[in-house]
Length: 117
Length: 114
Image (cartoon, rainbow over the protein chains, first blue to last red):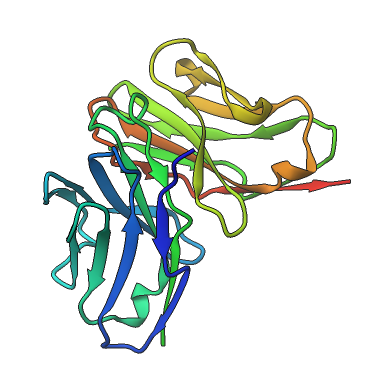
């Protein structure tokens, strides 16, 4: 079964540094997402992306964050200047269509654990 | 606004006994509801989904959930726990017409003892 793959599995960075988290969605999917889970807290929606533009973003997704689909396969999340509170597990997901989740469920990757020191 | 509340942060059962993971939802609209499972060092895997069809939904690995509108509940059950069921389980809601902006519960960690 096709999978969403995320690299790296664990990233350690210093506060103020830029990080890029990488994801390869399932090949025929058109909608892409980032979610994050701070340790001990709920999984939270960050952003959805379709047709090379952001379709929706949460209040968490401020100017420090950006997403890009630089080629036909990768989907990246960039944090421009990391803060301690950005430490979390970041999940990439993709879906074949925009329909309500029941008709087009999200497929998640294994996540990237970001540690900001 | 939509939300889900998972009533237990930890559940511990013996292998072969029933599993019950409780979830209540709040939604102004007719919701779509899901259960996702996360095994250690793995991604979030869809167990089952409810989308206003049958109220009793069957999922993978013998799990099922029943949508009860009168109780605003969507509890997850399994008749007989297996050691491999040990994982974190998330109840998730998305409003009807909501485009995959999933709203997660806090999660329930299921431990299965021999």
